[in-house]
Length: 312
Image 1 (cartoon, helix red, strand yellow):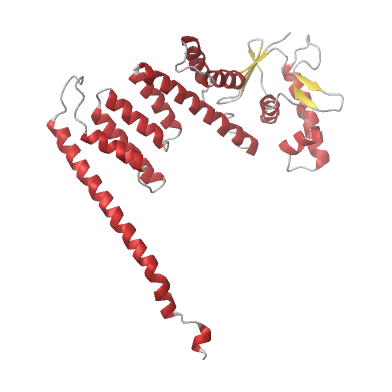
Image 2 (spheres, one colour):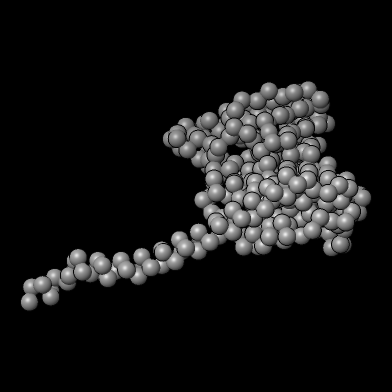
């Protein structure tokens, strides 16, 4: 029996018995949908409306029939019997055969990441770490890059979050082992995908602090502050600011190889002063806003007296 190898992360790639299978964009979309929802059959009208919602009902069904025929020709060799990969039920529904000889990167990724995250032990075993690393390496890009159907966007975000969860699990594992470089590397990968994850910024600050790299912990806080200001126009959360205060007030760890230079200490002092000034300015601004909020209703009533009273 022919074997299929399909990759949906990044650009869609399909190979049969080691040879690349060329598919049109429409057949790629149809195959990807059947693969991602491979555990249930799909009514033809559902598929037709999903992929050709801009066509009439008859035209959409005709396009589906053509796409299914092309997909069968591309996937199934002449020697193989019909309905190896695409199953037609007695009621005319279509399903990808989950029992066929195929390999799907998304399926392996989901299975291995979920299995590693479901472990009840404090730390992952070497086998679990290996499986998790292998699974995360399959995430070579976002799901079906270049496709923007609603169902694709939903699945893309779901798998992206699972990827981040896997990285977080690996990050915790390395932190518990004291493997700071590996843990920090996982943190950088997460922030590359989602730089607004403030809890990851905090975790990296702690890792830098524990590994004797206080200046890098300060830099991580500044990176967090800048991205939050630029993207959301907000300041870091109180717990992030509290951790920052702990970083700048804590003496250098005893196991640090060299003392921090005077220039860094001076810059650190200036940063502390600027942070305190910013916090004081925020408090003043908040009090001013509260005062204005109390004044505006009364001021408006003076400018716009009630019509009933003016007419009396």
